[in-house]
Image 1 (tube, helix red, strand yellow):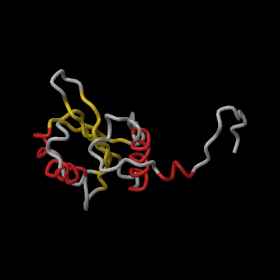
Image 2: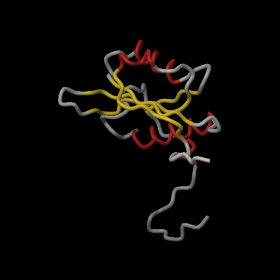
Image 3: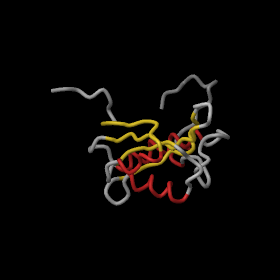
Amino acid sequence: MKVSPCYLFSRSVEFCEIEQLDMMLPYMKGIYVLYQCYDDGHMEVVYIGVGLGKANGIKGQLMIHRDQQPNVWSHFSVFEVWDNITKKQIKELAGFFRHVYRQDPYAMRGAAETKEYEPLVRIRRLDLEDMSWRF
């Protein structure tokens, strides 16, 4: 049996132009990233989102962004998860990235308001000077 190189992700496509959106498969679940590409070719993360399958897959979410925020982003990447990855796990993964990027003045401009990811706020925070990291 062949072993996948990724535990969470089954396939991905990166740095696609917004015009390629119609080529996407419907109903994919996973994480997507919106970027703004500048004249010099560098890209900045604008938003990290989730698609949760049939009712609101990645393609549908991207189409909403395209229609509501056409000038905010120019490219996207999609990271589809395996079927056994739950919606809760996908939300947690995206929440982690949003939490990390929340203080970045350039990233997450596509979000109305970027907040801390509440479950990360609730877990134990350790002081680096306290070297007894046992629970």
